[in-house]
Length: 257
Image (tube, rainbow, N blue to C red; front, side):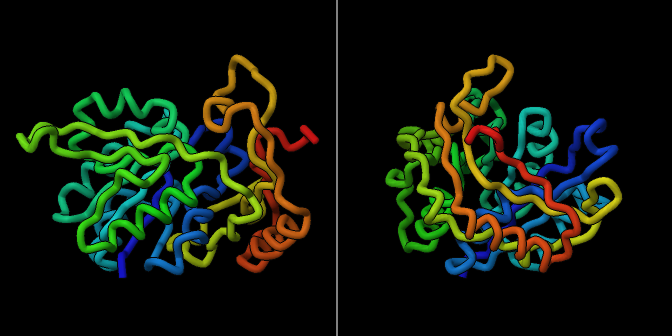
């Protein structure tokens, strides 16, 4: 079975970190939607004592095959250093995802950074990552059918690296997204919000507004989708069962409806 390690960036926004340090929802949501296909672990490197050493130990301990790195723009440089650490291990592949790789995938693909990146996952990750894991397990993996995926290949077989960009994936039906797998977290302590343990929940995705300072419309378009209230309550209960005293809602525009 494929061994997957999903990592969130060690870099934090210092002013926000003063009052809260929250876990990454994206990687736990992906974990919850692939954990029947692979052995998946997740870690928020912002609570690791030594993020680089943690990555090395974890790859070796769990014999990792695929490392997923999630980042925003201010976190990209730090995550590229993590990718370079992963490159020290033969046959371990790297996939970047999150806001910065989604919005700047062409820039990344045309840069020297490509030497450390096997895949870029654009947009929502649950379905694309699931298909990536399923494809990797095949005897002769062919990635051209995985929507929302960019993948590295040798151009004309001459050793020159290039990246092929598959068509984008349509927005997901939120009713088909399973709960996050909070049990996959390797680092469980260090998250706080106003002096209490905290976890993250979303009740919706997207926003129909077009604010110039915001990039969310480039992630989802001007769209707005909601989870059912039953699913939201189940998610809150799961967060509480995993030790959360506070809930941080990470919707793009929670008051839109």
